[in-house]
Structure formats: C-alpha cells, structure tokens
Image 1: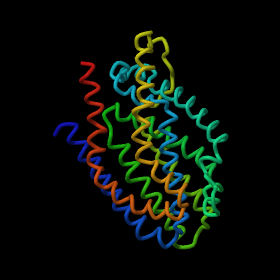
Image 2: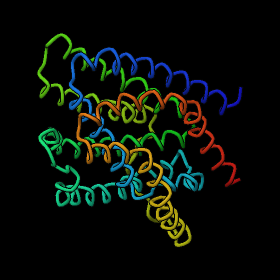
Image 3: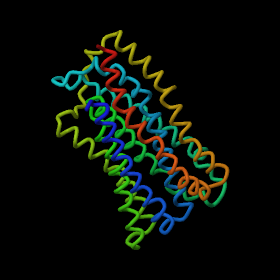
Amino acid sequence: MGIIQQQTIKGTFYSYLGVLIGFFSAYLIQPHVLSPEQVGLIGLLTTFSVLFAQVSVLGFNATARIFPYFRDPENHDNGYLGLAFLISILGFVLFCIAAYFFKDQIVQDKNDQNNLFATYYWQLIPLTFFTMVFNILELYSRMQYDTTMGKVLKEFTNRLLVLGALLLLLVNSVSFETFMWVWLIVNIIPTAMIAYRLHKRNQLSFRLNLEFIDKPLRRQIIHLCFFGILTGTAPFLIQNIDRYMINEEFGLTSTGVYTLAFTIGTIISLPARSLYSITYTVIAEAWKN
C-alpha cells in the first residue's frame, strides 16, 4: 500500500471517529448544558482563532512547496522550522496590535447577547497563538511524511477533550466561567502533544540557519509568502466568514444554531482533507526531483 493511500485511510478513519465524538458532543450534550448564545460564543472564538492563526503565519505555509530544498535531517532541515516560527511570531505580534485597536469592530456590540463575546474576547489571544503554533508544527510534521499525527490530534483528541469538558458541565462540576478556561486549556493540549512528539523524534529545533538561505531562495520565500497570504487566507475567510456575518446581523443565539447545523456539512469533506494533506508533501518532493 502506497504512502498516499495508507495515510489517507488512517486520516479519514480518525476524522470520522472524531465526527462521532463531535456529534455526541454537539447534538446530545451541548443542548443540555449550553445556551444557544454560549454555543455561538464557542463557535465564534473557534472561527476567529482559525482565521487569525492563518493570517498570522504571513503565508509561510505556502513555502511547503520548496521544503524539499531545506530537507536535511542531520542539520534539522537547515532551520526551516525556526524560520517558520520567526515569521509567524512577527505576524502574531501584528495580530495582537490589530486585535487591540479593532476590538469594537470585531465584537460588534450591538445588543446584550454580544456582551458574552466581549467578556471572553481576550481569550482569542492565547487561542490564536496556540492554533498558529499547532498549524506550524502540523505542517512540519506533514513535511516529514506524517499526516496522521496532526489529524489524530485535531480531529479526534481535541474533540475527545472538549467532550470531557462538556461532561464537567453536565454533572454540574464547574460553572460556565470555569468551563471556558477548561475549554481553552483543552484546545492548547494538542499543541503541546504534537510538540512533544516531534521532540521525541529529535525533529523539534528552532535553530536558524540564515547562511543557507541565499538570495535566490530568499526571493522565492518572499514570493511564496506573498502568494500564500492571498491564496491561503482566502479559503479560510470564505469558510469562516459566515459565522461572523450571522453574529453581526442576528447575534450569538443565531450563531449558535448555525454552528450546530454547520457541523453536519463538514463530514462530506473529511476524505478529501486527508488526501490533500499527504499528496501535497509527495508532490513537493517530486517537483524538486
């Protein structure tokens, strides 16, 4: 069995397993422990963190196309991961500045319902940061021909942990305020797990090797990053802007109802997402050769 077929099957299996857990959480637990406004809050925080994390990497994920030129296991891939973090941290700082100055525009505090979003608005900062770090590490893991680890952590482990947090609410062990902090922590755990896994493989190195990046390669990185900002951000914007628009127009209650309904549609795209993850790496290597 080829690597594309093998990893696609594994990724799809864990994705559908995660869907079962997500269905149990979203349709059997959430309606009993969370109000529509609270569901909308969680959906909105998730949407914004995914979108802002994508913007924060400043298109660097598009450089996966030229990763084979960096590939050198003995030299930690010539500082590719360190370069990814350097650029992404710069983008994250820019996001923090924008989040501070454009808070009112993002929150759109038109009614009392949206006060809930304003209350937990600053959770976007750590949530976006760790989502960004996870995306970088997951990309790097895929470049090492391991797409399953990221899929398991994002599609299965994360949803299992969120289910555990919801069960705490179900048995009245925590208040909603405490639950939101628990929810934040369980969304951070997969980032710590993927970092630990890469560390165990001796693949987690933040060392830079700027001498390796000559002028032609530097020019190509800049072009790809610019291209990645345009083409990488647009799909995320299209996929996630709907919740923002619904919240702006109708409030968190309608956003919560939409979030539950939207979950069903994601099932259709699961096999394709697993396929794209591994084929991108294989094609990049073949392009170099």
